[in-house]
Length: 98
Image (cartoon, rainbow, N blue to C red; front, top):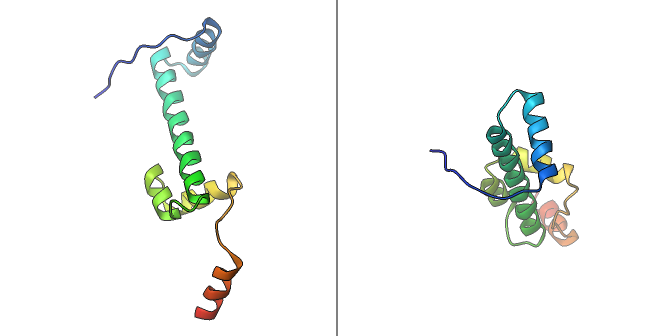
């Protein structure tokens, strides 16, 4: 169920949003909602990948927090060139296990 949220923005930002709405054939509210959804998704991914890099989250948990599949979060790791916290010692242990 939609919720109404009121906020103040600069006039030039409102004008830019109105321009996008006109180009896309949408109303201002729809454009703002889509922009907010994308910004929230990007923020969740950035935050989750930062926690993954710090060793506070597994990649599986990062994907879950973002509502992504493991393959989608791996693509985000590549796209954002995130540091994978995997040590040489861990690689050696994995190779021994194989």
